[in-house]
Image 1 (cartoon, one colour):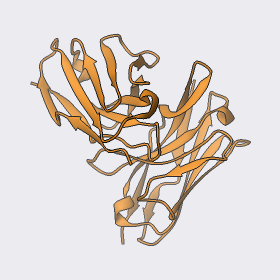
Image 2: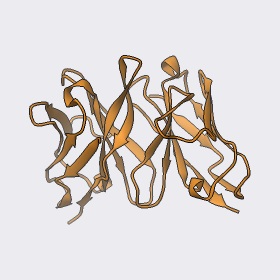
Image 3: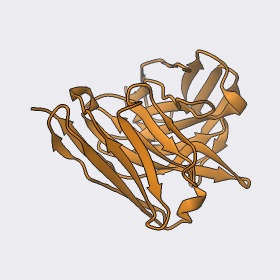
Image 4: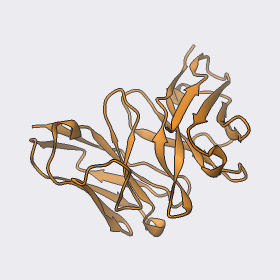
Length: 108
Length: 123
């Protein structure tokens, strides 16, 4: 089983700042099958990034993903008020298709 | 418009059973893998199970293997999760989610999610 570790656990930032979230895998993720999701309280998760770096439909270009192998990054170039949420990474290259524990981005 | 509507959640005693359903609309259901993901109260996301578009391939998390069964009826555009031998630690919101397709290929990663159904296992 691939274990995903996300850091930091919590990120305190102000609107307009840049957010950099990390997702590290215990072994190489097959074919960059790595996704990022955003979840707000009381809502279902929303897909942001798939294939490590492709933005999902309707996702603003301030969200970008990068990485390969065992190290992946989600970057939010300039935080908007609606971006404060919990972010999860998930690998779907090999079953079980595990999630990371999440990074909470909250307003400083 | 893609829609996923889960149902079947509720309160069940430890050791009991429950069957969740997820009715899909707005896309060619049989072309897409489907997954179940759960979230315990105040906790993170946990992937539970997935099934291929044709139903011939299924995967399970170790925590539910042997107790849960995923299936689908493509004539009814519905995916199911049969949950047996339920435990308190199975208490969670259960989401169904659609696999995504891109560039002519389809993958186990998910794009659209339902709003979830709450399962509570308690005596």
